[in-house]
Image 1 (cartoon, one colour):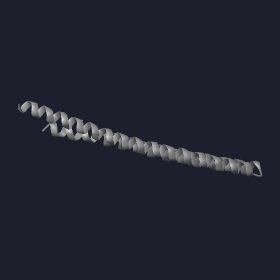
Image 2 (cartoon, rainbow, N blue to C red):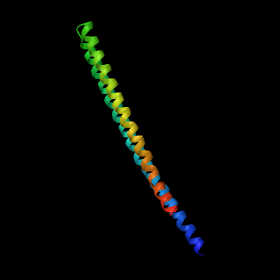
Image 3 (cartoon, rainbow, N blue to C red):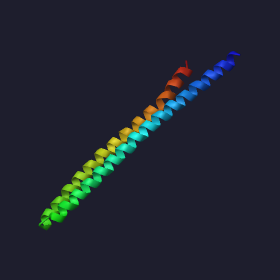
Image 4 (cartoon, rainbow, N blue to C red):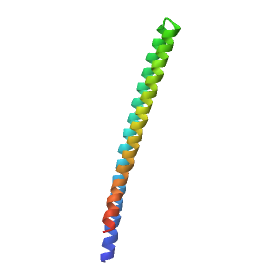
Amino acid sequence: MNSFEDASKVGKEMMDNSLKGYAAMTKGMQAIATEAADYSKKSYEDGVAVFEKLAGAKSLEKAMEVQTDYMKSSYESFVAEATKMGDLYADLAKEAYKPFETAMASASK
């Protein structure tokens, strides 16, 4: 009778940890999707603004300056966003693994 109760307890703990891991994955994926949408929106708006500046440029030199500034800021923005997304994915992995890490630690005792 005692082994049935132990098995039931272990099964419940595994289910609880799975649900916690799933919740962490869902939360993390929502944060990543929100960040990606925000970046896409900002990138689009920046592109439209640059197009408007290019359309209003009075000389080739001014157009080249606008384009160069846009390329530089676009690259810097991309690097910052890639770093941020990498951090979000790392946090997602840590949070999703945390319930199982706790279960493994308690099982080894």
